[in-house]
Length: 454
Ligand code: TYD
Ligand code: MG
Image (cartoon, rainbow, N blue to C red):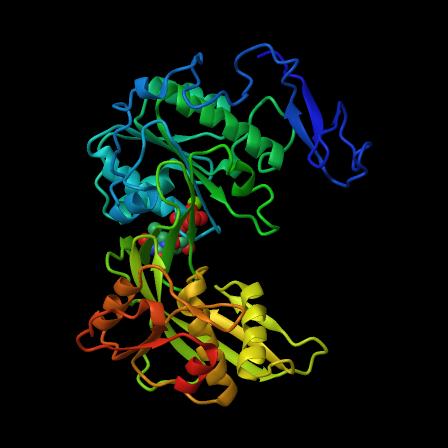
């Protein structure tokens, strides 16, 4: 293949130079030059400029003339994965599966492909493992394989050529960090290579209608060469997360052109691979009997279902000039805000206290409905007194000390009742009109009223 001309483009200001340098000549930013294929010089269609959804010649079409019949969904073989995808895989779409190394990305995709291979042809391209390793894993997990082909290859041009001959329905590339294109000189795994190879794969998928699943490791140093640089190119970005030593794994969509992004899929890593957790609403609650201080249970809303999670706080005298506010699984700007509201509207000062907060089980709660439970756990820890047992708490706190209703209040309450909770403290606006069986629901509308209660 003719040598393709490459240039270096500053990621800060967009200046192009023919040669790499440590500092951009124009904006003086350091380490901002990244190698790219020179689009102006590129003559062949092989150079990958992403050309839009179909990759075919484009023309203007009236919306009511658009043919939708070609977008049937296809099951990935795992219902939890289908749920996160918004109902299954869309043909010709590109899905990025991101996550820490070792979290189970290869495993989930292998399980899914084996299932699909029973009815359709699939291709698993791996740049990380050998053919034997993948096959042995499939056998050890007892997965039935039908029309399942494997390829160990890291050069993207080779991959697309081979895939074109094979014409699979679904294809996995594991992982994008190992793939390189011959058009660039830089090393595989760098921003330039990852981006250029991914662009070629995306265009290939669009043109051929092959569904493509790409694995991307989240790198330690801020995901620079990881999935982040690819998010805008692909149709859906799924993140696989969880505590490494824990068994539970959460699959979450952070971008999805074909569905909602707040769905959560729950899996457990076992000796026999990943098992789906179909009814995960209470798995994150800890199992101890006696209530402890600094802990509160809330009902969150994840996508289309409620989930009960435990929020813990530890408040301790601070010896640092600046007291610490550390949140794991919660928004930490929000903690500072809630502490200010607590001081102003309830007279509870924490300026000389370190505050740590955590959501048990590695769950992330980014909803404001966690406010009340978080405040309750902070107060409980501060006073070293457990909250009353079998109580579920949720609701948003406003800056004026008012307590605001949250969406799906009824469903959250029902879920709590189902799991044996006896008492719920919720915003006045979320109080159901009729009494609920087995669950005493207490509505609160002001911060001081809430503090009194707990
Ligand atoms: P893997 O899918 O290889 O991770 P990734 O592709 O995201 O890097 O999963 C690796 C981990 O999963 C490995 O450390 C062991 C664990 N594991 C199990 O516990 N049980 C199993 O059946 C499998 C296949 C893996
Ligand atoms: Mg892997």
